[in-house]
Length: 242
Image (cartoon, rainbow, N blue to C red; front, side, top):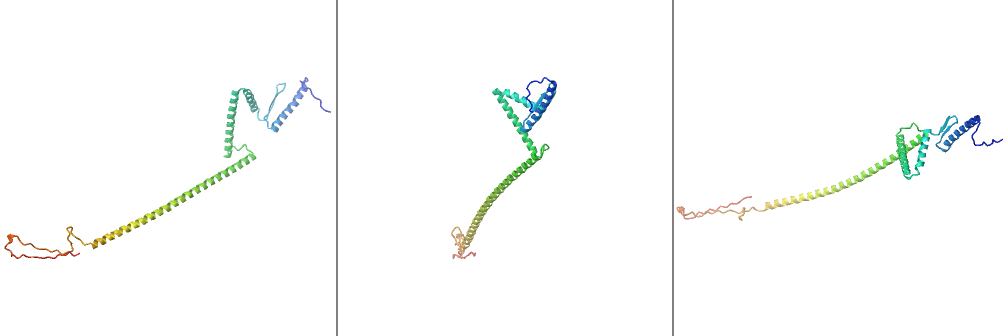
């Protein structure tokens, strides 16, 4: 036998009203809990009985639910004004930036091995995988940098080697030029010595030093008239021996 429909109006009987309130309150709290779990919704339920008793349920915390409700209620009124709407979205952007910064800081601390108390096995496993992938990327980048540096050092070494080869060639040319110059100087000195040894020494007046020298005494003057009239001739022959 099916249950008949109940008229939706105030129940006059106090006992029946209290029984109905108790049953429906429990069902309402149960449905609110199921809604928050099944649909991932943030639910807040507040019930006051006719006697003034408080019954409530919150999927997170009643304070956060009320604050969110109050904020959204104010924002719904502000959206009617364009200027207020701009300020609203600016506040939202600032709030999102703060949340992003906080999440980044938390993630950085977790990567450093800090603040891991609230993580489960799955979260820790994901964090470990991220660290392994990060470490692999760092090693690959380091190997690339080292490879590039080694190639650059090899290139510079080849340039230095080529410069050394060119310098050795220039030094060989300089040595050859110096040897030729020394040879020419030596030959010139030998030729001068040969010319000096073969050339006879002469006086600047034109007299040959190797020719015999003849000396002749002239006649005495009148004061020496007592000497014999016959002139005395002396001939000397001088020869330089070299």
